[in-house]
Length: 357
Image (cartoon, rainbow, N blue to C red):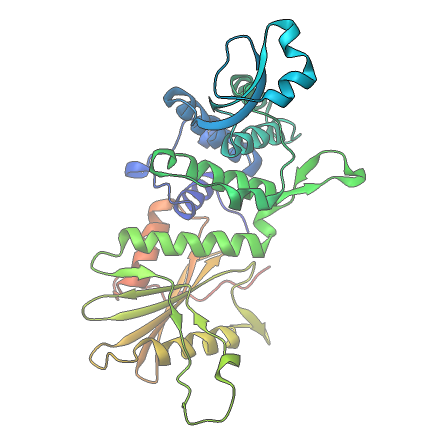
């Protein structure tokens, strides 16, 4: 799937809850030829802003030999080390430091991208300059579980978007043959990773733009008769990608990212039946307890070529199947997304999906 860099930038901005004001694009983004360079540019821009504001500092416990005692005197260590002969004592004290986990993860990601062969020389130099300004931060060996250990506060909220970028970079980096260094896989072809990004994009797009709706994933329980003898704990919970609720309507959405949204049968495109079954189950449960509100559904696909918005009536439910062409200019992508939310015959395209060459 070919997606312009500008659109990838918007896609990740929405996914990571970093909404560009008035559609503005950061400096240098348009010149990025691929994702590693896009991530490098966003990281450089973000860290330069962060460094201007000042890195987050926290109190860390330290132990050292001091001539001017402070904190807690460690008598045993002082005697064993012979510090008194040097006119000093060993103390344990709290010290305000930038050498904390979230700064360490940022520095490690800077180094990872700086060493990537795909990153352009001027961006590699910019990353090196940023790395030098992080000299007080320790080098660590990154494992992806470290990101879940980071605890941010209101005062460190500006770290959130950068750490989400860093985590994605580390998960996308693939070991090179022989175990030396790392390189990026073809992220756009990775349907698992890009499905997660596209799902977050759809969620946050409608959270921001669906005026009059509450929007978010929902857990739904199957309408199982309590008189049955089966073990009810075995029944799984359904979780929607996105459920939008207003005073007059309920809309359940399922977001999909595939190289080919539709299956092909005898040379003709067909909607994936399992996707329809899944959406149908959501529709039958989303309106429980609200008999006065119509329940509609939408399958929203990222499309490799051409847009298509098809509308159906299935068992009294309005169902929209939309393929969003991410290769078109972003204003058109934005308009097509809103068209899924607000059906309009003037904005609807009946174009059939293009048969791949």
